[in-house]
Amino acid sequence: MALYWVSIDAIALTAATAKSVLELGTPTTDRAKIVEWWAEFDGVTAANTPVKVEVGRFSTGVTTATTVTAEKADPADGAAAVVAKHTTSTEGAGTVVGMPWNKRIPPTSGFHYVAPLGREVVLAVSTFWRMRLTAAQTVNATVGVVWEE
Image (tube, rainbow, N blue to C red; front, side):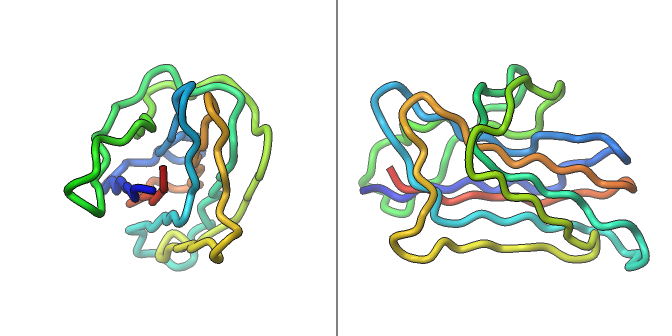
């Protein structure tokens, strides 16, 4: 199994607007395991409303986003089969179809999740994993995900 990751910095969140900031889409031939992910914010006012973080499997992928090349833990591994995208310009269709995870995180903080061994989230072929953020106030986010193929 090969290990891959993407990390995106300084994603601008517009106040009170949901934005999908990170998505993985598996091809028709490969599955993937999500082993860790994170979301951090650069807010400086502790009294501001927490950022809503939604993570889950989605029924369809986002339509307009930037594709990013995944980094690999072992340089000898081939390119990732999973397609990674970030920073949607239009919010995609689709509903959460599994593993919904909702949390509110202070905009002056962040959250890093590492899956316990053997309890990683598995993405079936032709499915999507997405992180969507909604901030009450304008703030920037740094997000990332690590997966295994």
